Image 1 (cartoon, helix red, strand yellow):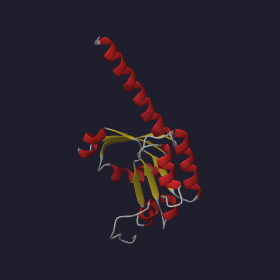
Image 2 (tube, helix red, strand yellow):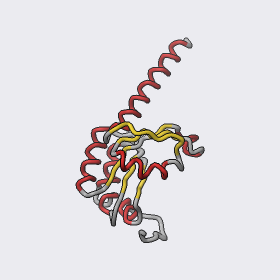
Image 3 (spheres, helix red, strand yellow):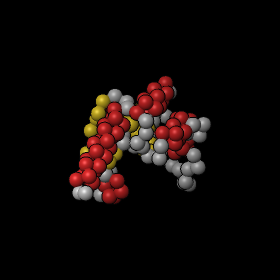
Image 4 (cartoon, helix red, strand yellow):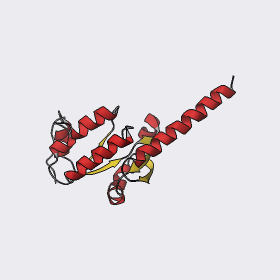
Length: 151
């Protein structure tokens, strides 16, 4: 059992030190890398077994690099971007597209069910992001086509 934190954490490392599993969702690739691997990042605060689940939509290549770096330190990692926006989060109907090891996915799946109606693996590290980016591209093409059709 990790120590109970009685105050808001100042740094991601403090969160990791009190956690076995950390979900994060930040704005871009640089932020994600800094929050996870930076000097005060999640990896720096690890106190025991730790799983990091990054729900940010970031570069698949950088996500694979993060996964490889964390693996060197015995930290499990999943890229798990989601779709469903604010309404999906509030209604626990998000869809997670997950990249990473199946054993890690199965271990944390019960936790993700608190926010998601659907979680599916897409393959190795970075593949959850590939699936999300493909979905975004298809949606963008459909929206562009429907806008042209309405003129």
